[in-house]
Length: 333
Image 1 (spheres, helix red, strand yellow):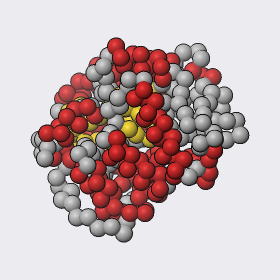
Image 2 (tube, helix red, strand yellow):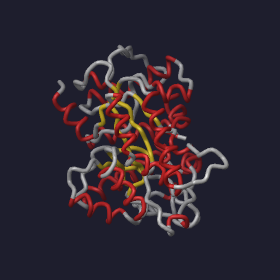
Image 3 (cartoon, one colour):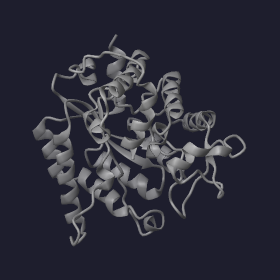
Image 4 (cartoon, helix red, strand yellow):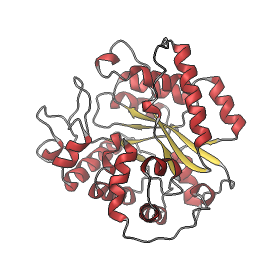
């Protein structure tokens, strides 16, 4: 979904021209060796549920996941923020949330309906679909809600290392994307935005060179503001399904997902890649939230698989956090 939305939002900047030497990756600009694959192994949807928190913690403390982002309007945010206070070096950002997609478990905007009526459906929750947000919400309402989510985090003592977008909603409309980039610069918080070679996401969209120039222009703005910038995004893992007829056991699920992640790492070009996943340790309750428990559990099991760790080490892949990227960017003039 993110790839398709990214294509839509980037159409508004194609008229700009910015020539960049695409042979030089943002990883190299930050001091990594030429040809290095530098990867943020990132867990989405933290704070959505107790099970989501447990999955992310397991993937990051017992596995190779390096980063996560938190859905501030959701019910289990306090539980995860309490964990962060006990583990302050954890790389955790904001999963900026403008949708509420599940049938029976839903959340409203932090700003409240009077301030952002265009973000609220008939149940008093955020819209379930990105298209509904695009149809009903104004850019000003989106900005108001993003600010509310940032401010709630800060008031709780949670200083996010980065920001990204739940369901890619902020990439669905040019004006939303503009707010995303503008607020990143204002708050000086890095954001998920692939403005280097963008090989994987461009392959999914079929970007023209003119569109790539527009993407690179926004990347230049973020870089010139002193923020680190990604070279690419890999966002296909949510759609991986085991072959039909395969008995779904933890062992089989782990083996399948591990092999898929190995393929993903191999597909990456040198540079900084944002590898997105959803790690959950699903209890009996999670099935009443979402039918995605199996794929999310598979992500968690792959992250803690010793075979995947061996593969990453053998391939010489550098795993990194947003915090480390920011520290490197601060040292570059």
